[in-house]
Length: 425
Ligand SMILES: [Zn+2]
Image (cartoon, rainbow, N blue to C red):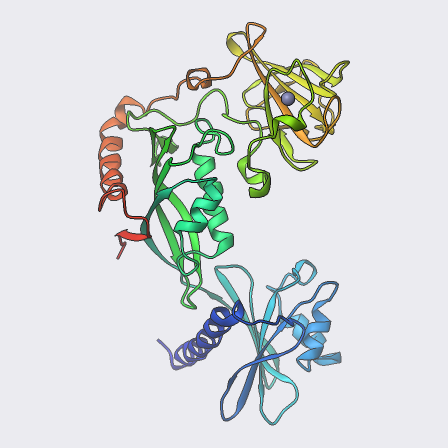
């Protein structure tokens, strides 16, 4: 290690402290005035503070508050090759250091992404840019709990802020729903007392920030029936995804629901109120969701109807699938651009948008699953069966699954608090 890089590490360590302090106390402040400077660290020689990019502000506005203007600003811009000047988002924090005796910044640090930090430091010739990689550490944890009202609420209740902040808990809920996209409709299928048990990777930055990484294994008990998911990948064959305890892919011919869980806010996640739905001959499933929520084709198919219908449907799409199954999507506000009868669509493709056309008193999607022309309440068997792990990989899968299962079910399923299942060293 050269003396120069050691010096720069020392500088980075100082920033880490300041950044961590800022991060840890930010939510505790009763007032939030992002446009004013927040003094953080005062050493003998330097003052450090954070300037935040406000709405409708440009980089030059923020830097002007740090004393960087005119030709100095031009020199800063020329040096900041890695700063996406035209795509900076409001709320972006610039950590600024200046000499106590001076009025202009000596150093500006900004997070380009969770993984990268950009530092611009003044030297005698102008500004010098350096990009640092932020080393997030990965650890495995197991969380489990019971669902009372919704998956969102359960994760809020069982996962502490100190373990994962709110936005990351939401990302975790979405990821769980994604794993079970073909098996469980978390807006409708879960009953009070159903349980979840998830083995996940959590990332932690040197500054103490915590993020959800990915799910490795899960068990959800829906209507008292356990459903397992184990992540498995094989580089040579290109296989990657979730498989059940029998080695069958969780991917099926049909999605369980035409709306993605992540597009239905927790407020809208409850079952559609029957009184709101005035359509008497109603035979389908209703999803309450905001106007414009994208509607997904639940399976590969061919468009057989698209347009305004007489009767209650309003704007309707009908798809024809294999095995004599059709699906209908009603009350839409709009169709995917250019959608036409005869067109092939793929599973998960956006075909339209939630609306309130036809006999409808509020924005919602009317979804029908028809077998041989008759509206049917789709059962698990109607979703199709998942492709099994190839025979040649079966032994590798079984050993990976056994390892994950041991970590997933460790310590008994009754532990509600996040517990360390294993740690990668
Ligand atoms: Zn309906």
